[in-house]
Image 1 (cartoon, rainbow, N blue to C red):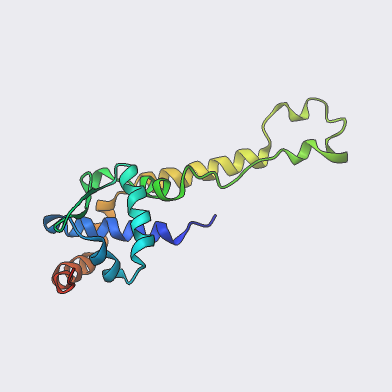
Image 2 (cartoon, rainbow, N blue to C red; image 1 turned 45 degrees about the vertical axis):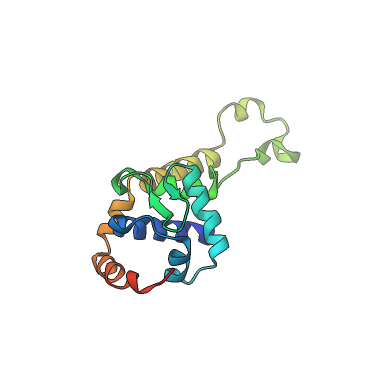
Length: 158
């Protein structure tokens, strides 16, 4: 499975906004400059997060982006789903029923395909793992990043 770079961007922005909660809202210009990202593309990612209720935006000169909820109430899976859509990495097309191999199978196909079942279990494990971690968890894993962000972020000008 391959996720777009927007997932990385979205997660880093959420973590950064969590670290800068007392300075929120943070402008798109500052976020884009902080990570050296194209502003318009980043804005589209952040808008997707806002539609999902993960971020909120405030218009105007002092406007910008903030977390819509406390970081401990935003899961990594929510961010991934907001940016990538409802992922289904494996699509079973039941090729076992086609061609010569599918003829005269009798009731063999009454049960779900073993490959499909195994892939679904793996997908559910992946989803559970991402749902079990929050933005707050990611924030805690990088205390040096938090200090650096808080110390240097004000140097960027809007």
